[in-house]
Amino acid sequence: MISVEVGTELPPLTVTLRRDDLVRYAGASGDFNPIHWSDRMAAALGLPGVIAHGMLTMASAVRVVTDWLDDPADLVEYGVRFTKPVVVPDDDKGVTVTFSAKVDKLTDGRAEIDITAIAGEEKVLGRARAVVRIP
Amino acid sequence: MTIDATMVGRSYAAAESYQVGREKIREFADAIGDPNPAYRGVDAVAPPTFAFMVGSLALEQLLNDEELGLRLDRIVHGAQKFSYTRPIKAGDDIAATATITTVRKAGDVEVIMYETALTTVDGDPIATSTSTISHNRADA
Image (tube, rainbow over all chains, first blue to last red):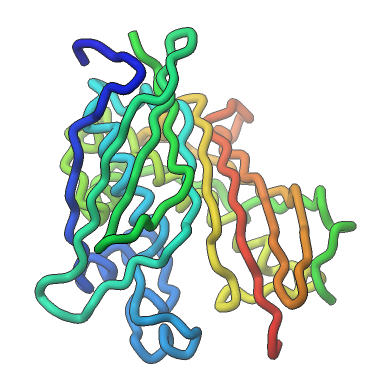
């Protein structure tokens, strides 16, 4: 980390999620809610299709911040709102989500960072914000 | 029964502590597609959202409270926040306790906030997780 100012943009990150990524996350996290692997169950709940675990999107989004930090242990706060479901089609292409982030505020040794998550044309997270310790 | 504001303050401790293993951290980091070396090896720390998985053991107990009348398949995760005292690391033995902090009703939908404290089994703080969930009771 060389210099941090209000307005500093962190290197963006693009992640592709396919059905097998959801199966893998379900297994690793223990979240086997069928809306993350069954089209039938997703449709029964009125969803447009199988959707990614919100916690998987949240995990991907914070990588923009932890990739930028020397030490991920400098993350002190992290929060998001799940505003739009991330639909993951049953094909080889999957869905692409792009994360970007910008320093919004600097206060006594801490930086507050706003994160933006876009899938297709839509923002899928709201008020995504991380607070990190900075040297 | 159904959940209401009189149930704010109820607390649910996970049935057992969670023993964090370095291979579980690696598996989780692989599953979120994160190659960060901090999440691997003998000194591995866990990715930030690993805390949710540990906390879900306390959520399980909350959902088991029949007086609340909540069903997992009617719940949508609306918002999530973490505050970290320190990262979770391999070798930690973690106690999780979830406390209901807010209950708001709007028709068939109940918006519930709960806070999950993650501590060592000796009570030293590690992280706090604040979750907002919506439970839809329509046709229930």
